[in-house]
Image (cartoon, rainbow, N blue to C red; front, top):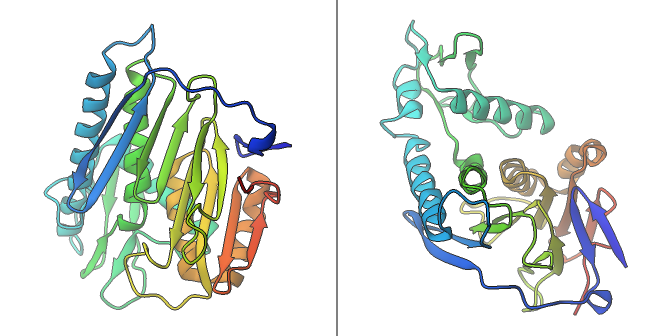
Length: 294
C-alpha cells in the first residue's frame, strides 16, 4: 500500500523492497550554540564540487544565517530592529525580503497567531515593507523582528539551496525537529521516524520521503512553557520553512485552532498529524495511511 501526499510517498515496509544505499558522504556539526545539523549526500556526476566541499559550503551558509537572523545581530535584522521608531527605512537584501514575505504568508495562514513582529505591549506592531524599493521599517519604538519561530526551517532550506547549486540532487538535511530531502537515498526513498513523546521507542510512525520536508514539534522540544492540549504536531510539505513554522505555531495554538488552520491548507498539499495530550491521533490532508508499524 502506498499514498503520496504533498510530494511524500508513504509506503508500508512489508510491501517495499529495500536495497542498501550506495556510499554517501555525511557530516554532523554545530551551526549555532545548542543547534546541530546533519547532511547526507550522494555523489553526482555533474557536481561542481566534491561532496565534502559542498557540505562544507552548506554548513558555512547555515552558520552565517543563524548569526544574521538573531534578534541582536549586527546584520540586517539587527539594523531593522535598531531603527525601530525612526523615520528612515532600512535597505535590505532580496533574500530578506523573500523571507519576510514568506513569514507574512504564514501569519495569514494562521490568522495572525504566527508573527515575526514583536512589541513590548504584547500587541503586534506594524511592519512596513516596500518590495519595489527593497526597504523595511518598524514605525513604532519598542518593536522588533524575531525570526526564532521560522529560523531553523529557513536555514535548512538555504542549506538545501547550496547543495542544489553545487549540482547535487540526492540528499537529506536534518536539524533539530526539521528534515528536508531531495531526490532519493540510492534506489530507495529517504526513511525517517516521527518521534512519539510518551510512547514507543520506535516512534509514532515511519514515513518514506522524496523531495519533501517534515517538521515535528512536541512539548519536550518546544523550548518554552506552553498551555496546550496537543502533545505533538507533524507537518509535511515541500519546504522546511513552512513546515517548521506551522508545526510550532499549531502546537502553541492547541487542537481546535490547529484544525481550523490546517483544514484549508490541506487543499494546497499540506499533510498534518496532530497528537493530543492523551495520545489520540488526528490526520489532516488525507494522511490516514501515512503511519505504519514495522
